[in-house]
Image (cartoon, rainbow, N blue to C red; front, side):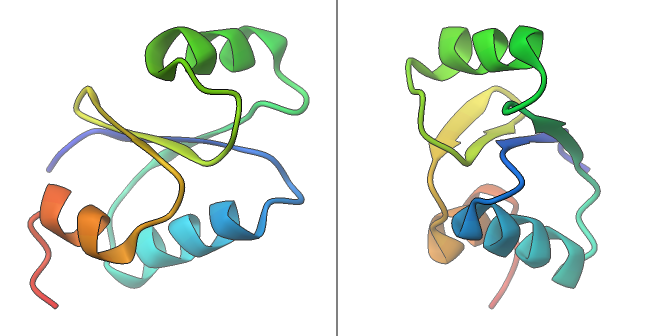
Length: 79
């Protein structure tokens, strides 16, 4: 199983959709609230060069935003 980290904020609708997608497909992930965790916010910006959320790190492959098809492909999920 690939290592998945999601950098998100509590009020982000796309973040919720990304987490729901992971749960729907039983993909374990670690979530970081970058609204309250400055260290993880800086890590997210360092990794992705982005300040927008969600930022999803799949084994070092960075994805910004929620794209169901791209996530499925990166995680080898058959639709």
